[in-house]
Length: 381
Image (cartoon, rainbow, N blue to C red; front, top):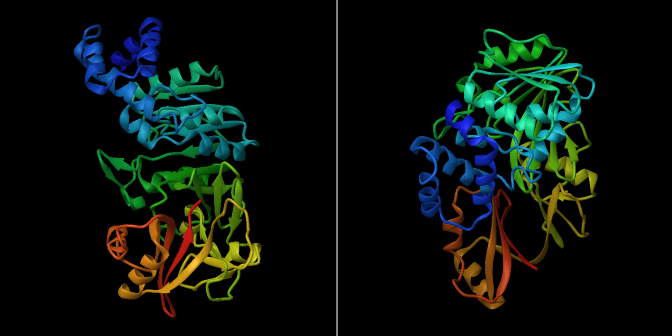
Protein backbone atom coordinates (compact mmCIF):
# COMPACT_ATOMS: atom_id res chain seq x y z
CA UNK A 1 0.00 0.00 0.00
CA UNK A 2 1.42 3.38 -1.02
CA UNK A 3 0.85 6.73 0.66
CA UNK A 4 -1.30 7.76 -2.32
CA UNK A 5 -3.44 4.62 -1.90
CA UNK A 6 -3.83 5.43 1.77
CA UNK A 7 -4.94 9.00 1.04
CA UNK A 8 -7.76 7.73 -1.17
CA UNK A 9 -8.87 5.01 1.29
CA UNK A 10 -8.83 7.41 4.24
CA UNK A 11 -11.16 9.95 2.62
CA UNK A 12 -14.43 10.02 4.61
CA UNK A 13 -16.68 8.69 1.84
CA UNK A 14 -14.38 5.78 0.92
CA UNK A 15 -13.65 4.95 4.57
CA UNK A 16 -17.36 4.72 5.36
CA UNK A 17 -17.88 2.50 2.31
CA UNK A 18 -15.02 0.22 3.37
CA UNK A 19 -16.59 -0.13 6.82
CA UNK A 20 -19.83 -1.32 5.20
CA UNK A 21 -17.98 -3.81 3.00
CA UNK A 22 -16.03 -5.10 5.99
CA UNK A 23 -19.28 -5.96 7.75
CA UNK A 24 -20.77 -7.64 4.67
CA UNK A 25 -20.64 -11.37 4.06
CA UNK A 26 -19.18 -11.10 0.56
CA UNK A 27 -16.44 -13.56 -0.30
CA UNK A 28 -13.01 -12.34 -1.42
CA UNK A 29 -13.64 -12.67 -5.17
CA UNK A 30 -16.93 -10.77 -5.12
CA UNK A 31 -15.41 -8.16 -2.84
CA UNK A 32 -12.58 -7.52 -5.28
CA UNK A 33 -15.04 -7.13 -8.14
CA UNK A 34 -17.06 -4.58 -6.16
CA UNK A 35 -13.92 -2.62 -5.28
CA UNK A 36 -12.64 -2.60 -8.87
CA UNK A 37 -15.94 -1.17 -10.00
CA UNK A 38 -15.40 1.98 -7.96
CA UNK A 39 -11.64 2.38 -7.34
CA UNK A 40 -8.53 2.43 -9.57
CA UNK A 41 -6.88 -1.00 -9.87
CA UNK A 42 -3.96 -0.37 -7.50
CA UNK A 43 -6.17 1.26 -4.86
CA UNK A 44 -8.71 -1.57 -5.19
CA UNK A 45 -6.00 -4.15 -4.44
CA UNK A 46 -4.90 -2.17 -1.39
CA UNK A 47 -8.53 -1.85 -0.24
CA UNK A 48 -9.16 -5.59 -0.64
CA UNK A 49 -6.10 -6.39 1.47
CA UNK A 50 -7.10 -3.83 4.09
CA UNK A 51 -10.63 -5.25 4.43
CA UNK A 52 -9.26 -8.79 4.69
CA UNK A 53 -6.79 -7.72 7.38
CA UNK A 54 -9.46 -5.78 9.31
CA UNK A 55 -11.68 -8.85 9.46
CA UNK A 56 -8.72 -10.81 10.77
CA UNK A 57 -7.71 -8.04 13.19
CA UNK A 58 -10.84 -8.32 15.34
CA UNK A 59 -9.01 -10.81 17.59
CA UNK A 60 -5.77 -8.83 17.70
CA UNK A 61 -7.36 -5.41 18.24
CA UNK A 62 -10.70 -6.18 19.93
CA UNK A 63 -11.21 -2.53 20.84
CA UNK A 64 -10.79 -1.47 17.23
CA UNK A 65 -8.01 0.95 18.23
CA UNK A 66 -5.86 0.10 15.20
CA UNK A 67 -7.57 0.13 11.78
CA UNK A 68 -4.89 1.14 9.28
CA UNK A 69 -2.17 -1.30 8.26
CA UNK A 70 -0.63 -3.25 5.41
CA UNK A 71 0.09 -6.97 5.65
CA UNK A 72 3.64 -6.76 7.01
CA UNK A 73 2.78 -3.93 9.37
CA UNK A 74 -0.19 -5.88 10.71
CA UNK A 75 1.79 -9.10 11.15
CA UNK A 76 4.58 -7.39 13.08
CA UNK A 77 2.31 -5.18 15.16
CA UNK A 78 1.67 -5.80 18.84
CA UNK A 79 -1.75 -7.02 19.91
CA UNK A 80 -3.88 -4.61 21.90
CA UNK A 81 -3.69 -6.51 25.19
CA UNK A 82 0.10 -6.67 25.15
CA UNK A 83 0.72 -3.10 23.97
CA UNK A 84 -1.53 -1.67 26.70
CA UNK A 85 0.05 -3.89 29.37
CA UNK A 86 3.58 -2.98 28.31
CA UNK A 87 2.86 0.75 28.03
CA UNK A 88 1.90 0.92 31.72
CA UNK A 89 5.52 0.32 32.69
CA UNK A 90 6.40 3.62 31.01
CA UNK A 91 4.22 5.58 33.47
CA UNK A 92 7.21 7.57 34.82
CA UNK A 93 8.37 8.68 31.38
CA UNK A 94 8.11 12.28 30.21
CA UNK A 95 9.08 11.89 26.55
CA UNK A 96 9.23 8.54 24.77
CA UNK A 97 10.85 7.82 21.45
CA UNK A 98 9.04 5.03 19.59
CA UNK A 99 11.82 4.02 17.21
CA UNK A 100 10.69 1.95 14.21
CA UNK A 101 7.11 3.00 14.94
CA UNK A 102 5.51 0.86 12.23
CA UNK A 103 1.73 1.35 12.10
CA UNK A 104 1.65 3.07 15.50
CA UNK A 105 -0.10 0.49 17.67
CA UNK A 106 2.51 0.70 20.43
CA UNK A 107 2.86 4.45 20.01
CA UNK A 108 -0.84 5.02 20.63
CA UNK A 109 -0.67 2.88 23.80
CA UNK A 110 2.48 4.66 25.02
CA UNK A 111 0.88 8.07 24.42
CA UNK A 112 -1.59 7.33 27.21
CA UNK A 113 1.33 7.86 29.61
CA UNK A 114 3.67 10.43 28.02
CA UNK A 115 4.50 12.52 24.98
CA UNK A 116 5.61 10.16 22.18
CA UNK A 117 7.53 10.81 18.99
CA UNK A 118 7.36 7.90 16.58
CA UNK A 119 10.17 7.52 14.03
CA UNK A 120 9.38 5.46 10.93
CA UNK A 121 11.25 5.27 7.64
CA UNK A 122 8.23 4.26 5.52
CA UNK A 123 6.05 7.22 4.42
CA UNK A 124 3.01 4.92 4.06
CA UNK A 125 3.37 3.58 7.59
CA UNK A 126 3.85 7.08 8.94
CA UNK A 127 0.50 7.83 7.34
CA UNK A 128 -1.03 4.75 8.96
CA UNK A 129 0.30 5.83 12.37
CA UNK A 130 -1.24 9.28 11.98
CA UNK A 131 -4.58 7.79 10.98
CA UNK A 132 -4.60 5.29 13.84
CA UNK A 133 -3.80 8.11 16.29
CA UNK A 134 -6.48 10.33 14.74
CA UNK A 135 -9.17 7.64 14.95
CA UNK A 136 -8.79 7.28 18.73
CA UNK A 137 -8.26 10.98 19.44
CA UNK A 138 -4.62 10.52 20.44
CA UNK A 139 -2.96 13.98 20.48
CA UNK A 140 0.30 13.12 22.28
CA UNK A 141 1.74 11.04 19.45
CA UNK A 142 3.78 12.78 16.76
CA UNK A 143 5.22 10.92 13.79
CA UNK A 144 8.40 11.77 11.93
CA UNK A 145 9.33 10.08 8.66
CA UNK A 146 13.05 9.41 9.15
CA UNK A 147 15.70 6.70 9.46
CA UNK A 148 15.99 5.93 13.17
CA UNK A 149 19.62 4.85 12.75
CA UNK A 150 20.50 8.41 11.67
CA UNK A 151 18.25 10.51 13.88
CA UNK A 152 16.24 10.14 17.07
CA UNK A 153 14.33 12.94 18.84
CA UNK A 154 15.18 14.01 22.40
CA UNK A 155 13.81 11.47 24.87
CA UNK A 156 14.30 9.97 28.30
CA UNK A 157 12.70 6.59 27.48
CA UNK A 158 12.79 4.61 24.25
CA UNK A 159 10.81 1.73 22.78
CA UNK A 160 12.47 -0.24 19.99
CA UNK A 161 10.59 -2.60 17.71
CA UNK A 162 13.04 -3.83 15.04
CA UNK A 163 11.79 -5.71 12.00
CA UNK A 164 11.85 -9.46 12.59
CA UNK A 165 11.09 -10.70 9.11
CA UNK A 166 11.82 -10.26 5.44
CA UNK A 167 8.84 -11.14 3.27
CA UNK A 168 7.52 -14.43 4.60
CA UNK A 169 10.82 -15.34 6.29
CA UNK A 170 10.82 -14.89 10.06
CA UNK A 171 14.11 -14.13 11.80
CA UNK A 172 15.11 -16.28 14.78
CA UNK A 173 18.38 -14.58 15.78
CA UNK A 174 19.02 -11.01 16.88
CA UNK A 175 21.81 -10.69 14.31
CA UNK A 176 19.16 -10.63 11.54
CA UNK A 177 17.18 -7.68 12.91
CA UNK A 178 16.63 -4.39 11.09
CA UNK A 179 17.80 -1.93 12.42
CA UNK A 180 20.81 -3.86 13.65
CA UNK A 181 21.04 -5.47 17.07
CA UNK A 182 24.00 -3.19 17.94
CA UNK A 183 21.88 -0.12 17.19
CA UNK A 184 19.02 -1.42 19.36
CA UNK A 185 21.30 -2.22 22.31
CA UNK A 186 23.06 1.15 22.10
CA UNK A 187 19.74 2.96 22.00
CA UNK A 188 18.35 0.97 24.91
CA UNK A 189 21.37 1.28 27.18
CA UNK A 190 21.84 5.01 26.58
CA UNK A 191 18.29 5.94 27.67
CA UNK A 192 17.00 6.29 31.21
CA UNK A 193 14.69 3.38 30.54
CA UNK A 194 14.00 1.26 27.48
CA UNK A 195 12.25 -1.76 26.05
CA UNK A 196 13.11 -3.86 23.00
CA UNK A 197 10.41 -6.03 21.48
CA UNK A 198 11.62 -9.37 20.09
CA UNK A 199 10.09 -12.55 18.75
CA UNK A 200 9.42 -15.15 21.46
CA UNK A 201 11.36 -17.60 19.26
CA UNK A 202 14.61 -15.72 19.82
CA UNK A 203 17.06 -17.11 22.36
CA UNK A 204 17.90 -15.19 25.58
CA UNK A 205 21.29 -16.90 25.78
CA UNK A 206 22.34 -14.83 22.74
CA UNK A 207 21.90 -11.46 24.46
CA UNK A 208 24.53 -11.14 27.22
CA UNK A 209 22.80 -8.03 28.52
CA UNK A 210 21.89 -6.48 31.86
CA UNK A 211 18.19 -6.62 31.04
CA UNK A 212 15.02 -8.23 32.31
CA UNK A 213 13.52 -10.70 29.86
CA UNK A 214 9.73 -11.02 29.88
CA UNK A 215 7.76 -13.53 27.83
CA UNK A 216 4.16 -12.48 27.27
CA UNK A 217 1.23 -14.65 26.26
CA UNK A 218 -2.19 -13.60 25.12
CA UNK A 219 -5.18 -15.93 24.83
CA UNK A 220 -3.09 -19.08 25.16
CA UNK A 221 -0.20 -18.21 22.82
CA UNK A 222 3.26 -16.87 23.65
CA UNK A 223 3.32 -13.86 21.35
CA UNK A 224 6.00 -11.51 22.60
CA UNK A 225 9.38 -11.25 24.24
CA UNK A 226 10.32 -7.90 25.76
CA UNK A 227 13.72 -6.85 27.10
CA UNK A 228 13.54 -4.19 29.80
CA UNK A 229 16.48 -1.85 30.53
CA UNK A 230 17.47 0.77 33.08
CA UNK A 231 14.61 2.25 35.09
CA UNK A 232 12.14 -0.22 33.55
CA UNK A 233 14.08 -3.33 34.63
CA UNK A 234 12.51 -5.15 37.61
CA UNK A 235 14.21 -8.53 37.69
CA UNK A 236 15.92 -11.09 35.48
CA UNK A 237 13.37 -13.34 33.79
CA UNK A 238 9.57 -13.28 33.92
CA UNK A 239 6.53 -14.82 32.26
CA UNK A 240 3.21 -12.93 32.21
CA UNK A 241 -0.18 -14.20 31.09
CA UNK A 242 -2.76 -11.82 29.67
CA UNK A 243 -5.47 -10.74 30.12
CA UNK A 244 -5.24 -11.92 33.76
CA UNK A 245 -1.85 -10.28 34.30
CA UNK A 246 -0.63 -13.18 36.45
CA UNK A 247 3.14 -13.37 36.46
CA UNK A 248 5.94 -15.65 37.68
CA UNK A 249 9.64 -14.83 37.97
CA UNK A 250 12.88 -16.78 38.02
CA UNK A 251 13.56 -14.99 41.33
CA UNK A 252 10.53 -16.69 42.95
CA UNK A 253 11.07 -19.82 45.09
CA UNK A 254 11.28 -22.99 42.99
CA UNK A 255 10.39 -26.63 43.53
CA UNK A 256 12.91 -29.44 42.93
CA UNK A 257 10.67 -32.30 44.11
CA UNK A 258 9.82 -34.90 41.47
CA UNK A 259 6.77 -37.10 41.99
CA UNK A 260 4.67 -39.57 40.00
CA UNK A 261 1.63 -38.26 38.17
CA UNK A 262 -1.06 -37.44 40.72
CA UNK A 263 -4.76 -36.73 40.45
CA UNK A 264 -4.12 -33.58 38.43
CA UNK A 265 -1.60 -32.73 35.74
CA UNK A 266 -0.83 -29.11 34.86
CA UNK A 267 0.46 -27.80 31.54
CA UNK A 268 2.09 -24.37 31.99
CA UNK A 269 0.95 -21.47 29.86
CA UNK A 270 3.19 -21.15 26.76
CA UNK A 271 4.92 -18.05 28.18
CA UNK A 272 5.72 -19.94 31.40
CA UNK A 273 7.02 -22.92 29.45
CA UNK A 274 9.10 -20.69 27.14
CA UNK A 275 10.72 -19.06 30.16
CA UNK A 276 11.21 -22.50 31.82
CA UNK A 277 9.50 -21.36 35.03
CA UNK A 278 7.38 -24.43 35.77
CA UNK A 279 9.36 -25.15 38.95
CA UNK A 280 8.47 -21.69 40.27
CA UNK A 281 4.78 -22.31 39.51
CA UNK A 282 4.96 -25.67 41.28
CA UNK A 283 6.42 -24.07 44.40
CA UNK A 284 3.84 -21.27 44.45
CA UNK A 285 0.86 -23.63 44.33
CA UNK A 286 2.19 -26.56 46.38
CA UNK A 287 2.65 -28.82 43.36
CA UNK A 288 5.50 -31.07 42.19
CA UNK A 289 7.44 -31.68 39.00
CA UNK A 290 6.64 -34.72 36.89
CA UNK A 291 10.26 -34.64 35.72
CA UNK A 292 13.09 -32.13 35.82
CA UNK A 293 13.31 -32.55 32.05
CA UNK A 294 9.67 -31.62 31.33
CA UNK A 295 7.68 -28.41 31.72
CA UNK A 296 4.82 -30.33 33.41
CA UNK A 297 3.74 -30.31 37.07
CA UNK A 298 1.35 -32.46 39.06
CA UNK A 299 -0.56 -32.61 42.32
CA UNK A 300 -3.57 -34.06 44.09
CA UNK A 301 -5.51 -30.81 44.37
CA UNK A 302 -7.15 -28.53 41.83
CA UNK A 303 -5.37 -25.20 41.39
CA UNK A 304 -7.06 -22.44 39.41
CA UNK A 305 -4.58 -20.04 37.83
CA UNK A 306 -3.92 -18.59 34.40
CA UNK A 307 -0.32 -19.75 34.69
CA UNK A 308 -1.29 -23.43 34.50
CA UNK A 309 -3.91 -25.40 32.59
CA UNK A 310 -5.38 -28.20 34.69
CA UNK A 311 -6.18 -31.73 33.47
CA UNK A 312 -7.81 -34.24 35.80
CA UNK A 313 -6.10 -37.59 35.27
CA UNK A 314 -8.31 -40.42 34.02
CA UNK A 315 -5.53 -42.90 33.18
CA UNK A 316 -1.76 -43.16 33.07
CA UNK A 317 -0.54 -45.61 30.43
CA UNK A 318 3.09 -46.62 29.78
CA UNK A 319 4.32 -45.40 26.40
CA UNK A 320 3.99 -48.71 24.54
CA UNK A 321 2.06 -48.91 21.29
CA UNK A 322 0.04 -52.10 21.81
CA UNK A 323 -0.79 -51.36 25.43
CA UNK A 324 -1.73 -47.79 24.60
CA UNK A 325 -4.12 -48.79 21.81
CA UNK A 326 -5.65 -51.50 24.00
CA UNK A 327 -6.33 -49.09 26.87
CA UNK A 328 -7.73 -46.42 24.58
CA UNK A 329 -10.15 -48.93 23.05
CA UNK A 330 -11.16 -50.09 26.52
CA UNK A 331 -11.83 -46.49 27.55
CA UNK A 332 -13.64 -45.81 24.23
CA UNK A 333 -11.38 -42.75 24.05
CA UNK A 334 -10.91 -40.26 21.24
CA UNK A 335 -8.03 -37.89 22.08
CA UNK A 336 -8.72 -34.41 20.73
CA UNK A 337 -5.96 -32.46 22.46
CA UNK A 338 -2.39 -33.70 22.27
CA UNK A 339 0.34 -32.18 24.45
CA UNK A 340 3.89 -33.32 23.77
CA UNK A 341 6.86 -33.06 26.10
CA UNK A 342 10.29 -34.62 25.63
CA UNK A 343 9.59 -36.22 22.26
CA UNK A 344 10.49 -35.35 18.69
CA UNK A 345 7.42 -37.15 17.40
CA UNK A 346 4.95 -34.84 15.67
CA UNK A 347 1.33 -34.55 16.74
CA UNK A 348 0.35 -36.48 13.60
CA UNK A 349 2.74 -39.32 14.50
CA UNK A 350 1.32 -39.48 18.00
CA UNK A 351 -2.25 -39.50 16.74
CA UNK A 352 -1.40 -42.48 14.55
CA UNK A 353 -0.98 -44.47 17.78
CA UNK A 354 -4.57 -43.81 18.80
CA UNK A 355 -7.65 -45.72 17.68
CA UNK A 356 -9.59 -43.81 15.04
CA UNK A 357 -12.92 -44.24 16.80
CA UNK A 358 -14.15 -43.46 20.27
CA UNK A 359 -16.98 -41.57 21.93
CA UNK A 360 -15.14 -40.33 25.03
CA UNK A 361 -13.44 -36.98 24.31
CA UNK A 362 -10.07 -36.86 26.00
CA UNK A 363 -6.78 -35.01 26.13
CA UNK A 364 -3.58 -37.00 25.72
CA UNK A 365 -0.38 -35.74 27.34
CA UNK A 366 2.58 -37.62 25.86
CA UNK A 367 5.43 -37.33 28.35
CA UNK A 368 8.78 -38.85 27.41
CA UNK A 369 11.66 -38.35 29.82
CA UNK A 370 14.05 -40.53 31.86
CA UNK A 371 11.96 -42.67 34.25
CA UNK A 372 8.80 -41.01 32.95
CA UNK A 373 7.56 -42.27 29.58
CA UNK A 374 3.79 -42.30 29.81
CA UNK A 375 0.64 -41.07 28.17
CA UNK A 376 -1.69 -39.29 30.58
CA UNK A 377 -5.35 -39.19 29.60
CA UNK A 378 -7.83 -36.61 30.83
CA UNK A 379 -11.52 -36.15 30.02
CA UNK A 380 -12.49 -32.99 28.18
CA UNK A 381 -15.62 -31.22 29.30
